[in-house]
Length: 368
Ligand SMILES: Cc1ncc(COP(=O)(O)O)c(C=O)c1O
Image 1 (cartoon, rainbow, N blue to C red):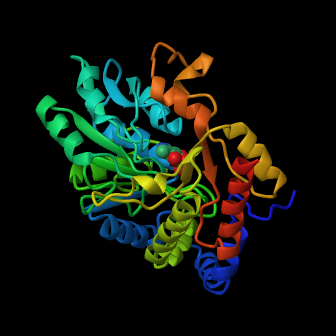
Image 2: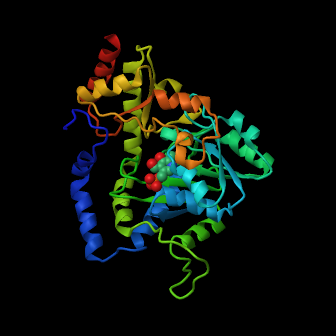
Image 3: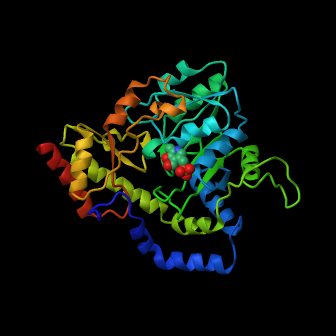
């Protein structure tokens, strides 16, 4: 089905960058620069400078960024890590993959971790907090760092959805021991496949993640630990470097679209728009534009009929999947959100006409 407004539009972004991108891809292939070449290094420099950390290490996904950061931080079997259920499953899975136990708590109105719940969840086994900057909004990192300091906990930020987002002037991925980013195609900065990175100010963490991503090889002949294949592909890095210079412009456009959606939808009492939560502490980058909507499933079907593609990402909360052994957690607000949230199309290439159309269709649904 051809949508009037699709949920993502990879083709249009490629068309806009085609000349520059094709040239870069061709050059990279002609030079045979495929694994850990200069483009990866250049990307790491770009990312560290943008986020404001000393180091960035390119990886092949955001999930690897989380797993390898937790491992580099020494999180292991028997440890507990506090995070949220209202997130993409990778935040929780990464904790399980290092052998630790995820301890899930609720989020607040803006979908970020409820900082008032963190201390209640701390036990003698708690080693880390993993806040998730969901939808492009940074958690209250000042409070989280205070709690972490008071209880001697490590903080690993899941910044997969928050490249460029800030809390009180400081960027996502620069607060904790490590920040974990995803460059999945739909992300603010998206590759042409899978890609991720860790940012950190800690030299040891950077070094460990670098070793882990490449089989523990310090040099071609010296292996200092067991590792994985988790490198950022050089070709993806080359493409990401082309896109990097557009990042500020794309973020600006996302914020403009959020403002247009926010204003256009403000008169509809049946929905709550994230734009209404904008405040001076947060610089949101709107990776996703997620509404809380009455009659959410009806709205989804109506918009589909109208040619507007939306996404109901997690109708089952992460902790309610029966095979994952997480159902002991009771998180009323996260469970409520799973029934209410719906993501609207949000990408810089959206036209004014498309934005107006989405707003009008939502208005039409609730005026029926
Ligand atoms: C919050 C969050 N954490 C982690 C990830 C995992 O990233 P990746 O898909 O690159 O492994 C994602 C990806 O969508 C995400 O949104």
